[in-house]
Amino acid sequence: MKRYFGLLAALIIFFATGCTAALIGGAAGGGYAVATDERQTDRMMDDSTITSRINSAMVKDDLIKAYQVDVDTVEGHVTLTGVVKTRRESQRAVQLASRERGVKSVRNNLQIGDKTWGESFNDTWLGSKIKSKLVAEPEIRSLNIDVDVHKGIVTLTGVVGSNYQKKRAMAIARATEGTRRVVDNLRVK
Image 1: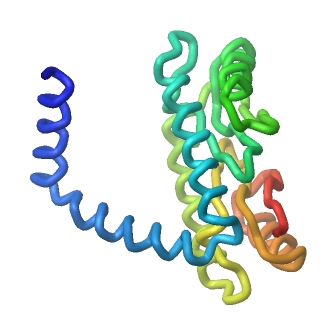
Image 2 (image 1 turned 180 degrees about the horizontal axis):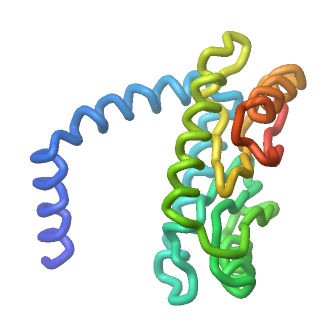
């Protein structure tokens, strides 16, 4: 009963705050993303399930601050990005991700240290600039590329259709002011 009450309360808040447009727009965008993604739909669903299970495990874990870790999965290969306070947290995140069924590999791009509010703002701004440039590039399916930025280090994750698209996306990220380094997690399909 408590579970249903919590769900009902969340739905009321969701609809009362105007989030339905985001949901509908997100669903439409999600449909487009599925239609343009280089991966097969069942593989995308598997990747999404793996990501969700890893996120859930991190939320339940006492050591990890799940909101600090971004999990991306492409064809069973998991990439962890973000900033955690200790090496122990980083190792624990890798351990939790590695345990999930369907995970082929885990790439640990977690940084150790603190992240200030200013760094968070700059990272968000940098990520937005890169994503905008990718969207403007006619030869790149930008919805297939996830852009994560932590302390100026840009991680590109996803599936692209050719080596040219991969090189072009990397070049755009590198050339964007504020980028310290680019980590390539793009796969060519």
